[in-house]
Image (cartoon, rainbow, N blue to C red; front, side):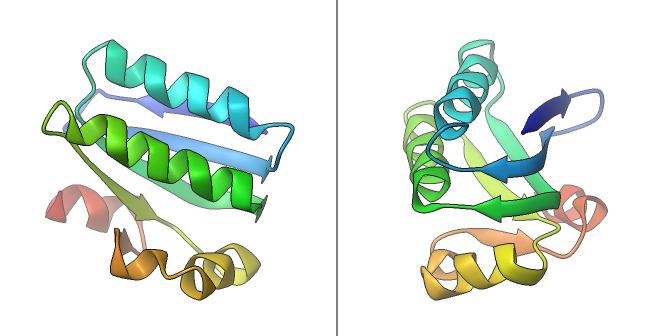
Length: 110
């Protein structure tokens, strides 16, 4: 798993590449929480290059949203496709989080 972030314009875009599972989820949580602690209140998480996400990864997204709520922040999802999108659909996350086809669309709406 690789995580990169860009906050040059508008909300911070966090791009996640590879697999988020029980082994890598704690690292993702650490990086997302560090961004929030550094002042990022609006996050767009780009899953366009993600291959797999487990329930541990879903928990990280929920925990991040909860932390953002304490600073009046927000999180939205972008680029979900294939099996990763199915996991989000089956878990009911689309009723909890705003999701967009692209990061550009998420930036316009966020």
